[in-house]
Length: 180
Length: 194
Image (cartoon, rainbow over all chains, first blue to last red; front, side, top):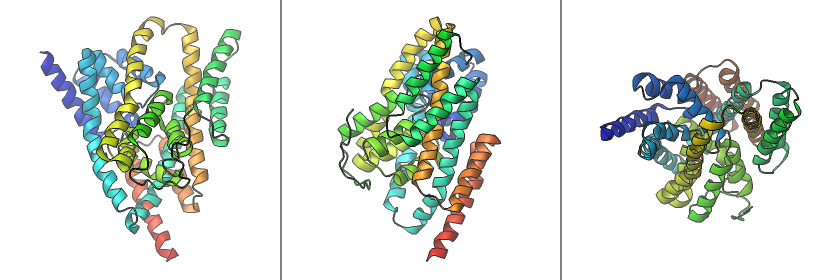
């Protein structure tokens, strides 16, 4: 019943698309519950490995959903999962974006933006610190995190340079047998 | 590196000033270089490299994208694409943001099954994860610095950071409480100015 499986993938991720307020990282426990506990498509370890892989690859975190679809049903699963996750929320974003942009000059939108911007920036900073805590196991990793933050803060160069440097430094430290 | 495709120094998000090809190449770049989440590289490309939006416009698009359901960066891509090139722009932005990462991640999936246990692979992954965290922190601090926040804005930014980053409050209640309070404070400040 392959069609039935694809239909379940579509329904599962379309529902998640509507409740995933605050992005994919925030929705991860909900995705895990559906994929592992409710649908039984994979076990805990596979789920954790797929997430780590999506983190190591470039691109938005939401591609983990495509990878889950791939694991369940290859290319058809990837396509259906990705579309189901992205299309419903994108339609909402399109409509809200137009309303906000059309009324950008009216004072209530301006006030709402003035209020939301600092909260957004605080949340981005929080995301960085949560990522740092997960990644930073030793002194060298903490130094790499701080150096990358300073690089972005004082330089206009592409942030990917800091990423390449961090990767190489960590590899060299491993090669020399230094503590990381 | 293809830089300054839009020579306007004060971007205002006028429809049509950024073509579909510009959006395609910009979002392909964001997708390909966005390791550990695309927010830092997206800000770099959209605000600094291509100058499509000002710091403030970018922060408010991200803010709206964060409050709406779905992936934040996809929501932002939809709104930015639509602003310059309508529905076609939105579709081009989302597809060009995701297509290469999806190809790469499925390829990595096959490699990972074979090489995950190698210590050099572990070392490389932990180094890039540590740097990726630093990029996010740096991008947030840079946005904060450039927007010249008022004292009350700094307070709400810090409260959001402390609640979610340090106290591990989940995102929905944090936004549901701090969002309206911060908007209320902005409203009071706005009224006092007049």
